[in-house]
Image 1: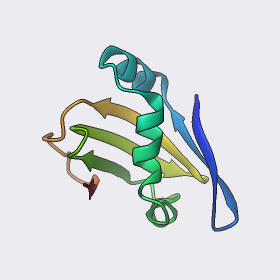
Image 2: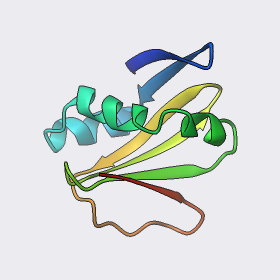
Image 3: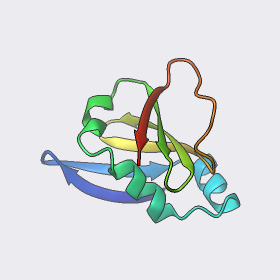
Length: 99
């Protein structure tokens, strides 16, 4: 499901949520707009992750959230949302922390 769409370096970039992520957001009462804003806060770093096949954990201490994404074909796909910032990051997952 589409959470947000914006232009980045002249490319249309989308933030989408998997069914699993949408279920976790609803279950944990996390607003979709907040999740999209946190993902968008990576700005141009999203382009660096595009089509790498890497999962990225975005840790937002202010909102006490962890968002796991994969960026492919100019889409940041939200895999899951965890309502705590102190999580175990699996091997190979890139970490991005925001204030």
